[in-house]
Image 1 (tube, rainbow, N blue to C red):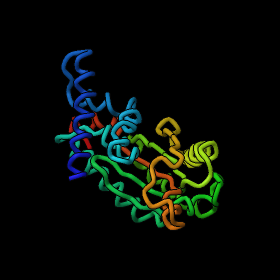
Image 2: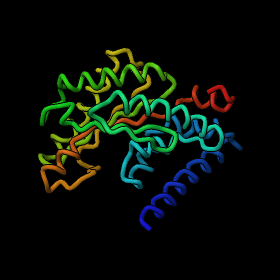
Image 3: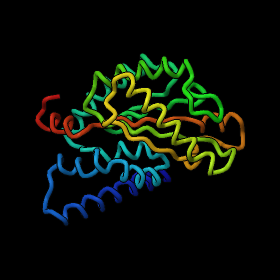
Length: 226
C-alpha cells in the first residue's frame, strides 16, 4: 500500500508540473516535456519527487523521463550501459531505474571516515566509471553525497558536498565533460539503513550517482536513431 501511495504521489507531482508548464505556452510534445523536467530542472523535480520517494537520485531519473516509445528506446540504451557498469565496477551497486541508471558507492570504498579525499581504490573504480561515461556522452550525471547522523549538521552538510564534488572533479580529470555533471550534498537527510548501528551508519555514508538522458539523446530516440 505504501509503494502504491508513493507512485501515485510521484505521478501527481509530475502531472502538476507539466500542467503548469503547458499553461504558460500551450501544448507540448514529449520531447518538450522531457526538456522541462530534464537537464534544466531535473534536479529540482528530483528534489520534489525524491522527497516523496525517499531518494533524490531516483527522483532525478523519474523527473527526466519521457515515456512511450521514445522512453523505451532510451531504456534499451541504458540497459547496455548498465550492463557494462555492472561488469566493470566491483565496489558499486548499479541499478536500472526507469529510463536511467542509479549507482551507489559505499563511502568506505571512496573515502576514509570524516574525509572527502579519494582513496586509491576509489580512483580505480572511478576511472572505470569515467571510461563508460565517455562512451555514452549524451547523458546528464547527478552526483550526491550522503553521511550518517554522527556529528552535527555544520560538519555533515559540507562534508557531503565535498564528497560529491571530489567525485565530480576526479571524473572531470579523467575526461568526462564537467558540464554534464551536477553535485549536491544531503548530509544525513536520506538514510537507507538504521543509523543506530555501525553497519547501518556504514551504509548511509555513501555517494549516489544518477545517469539519465540529455536532450540530444531524447531527440535521437524520438527520431528512432538510437
